[in-house]
Length: 278
Image (tube, rainbow, N blue to C red):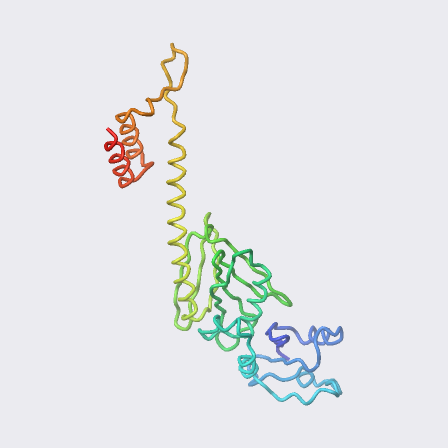
């Protein structure tokens, strides 16, 4: 028999060899009534039917009708929590989004909010898809592992660039971190990928402005510590013009403008203020 995929706790995992499936059954890690699927099969069906296990199905359970994963997902749409509604406008799988959001809620810091969720959707069947989750503070990628989930996150100030490349059916999102490290996730539906890219560009613009403002403030702070040294033959002392000398004040303002410590508009405003007092 071909390797078997499992659908357990609203999650597709695998594939697993038949021998491993039988061991999991013996250990109680999975149940005979859990659904399984092999490549090429038209539908999912209970593991007990796939392995032809005698009397394996619990007596108290009603016969399990053959259901595709898509039909099970449709059933969950009606039950999805209202708090997830705003993340499901672009054909995301509600069950997968629910898992990712619940995991993310455990990781959020004070004042951090989820802004968008994008989920992989590979052709034919998506086994344990990965996801991109954006918050107002971080770029996060969730990756499914067998019987678990891992994540990698970076605060926006560490993000140098977010890029999107579209293919015929989907798109790839890549995130370059300051220092050169690159994260990538493929098979994101185009509509979701475009939302991720647009939000990332808006954040990048804000981060660029914050960096520019911070650099300007650091320059201004550094300008206040300049000391002019006397000739070597004379005792060293700090030399500063009288505080009430308008010409000295104008000269210092001119120096700060030329050094890039203040902008032209600030220079003109201060200049007019000094001249008005002469």
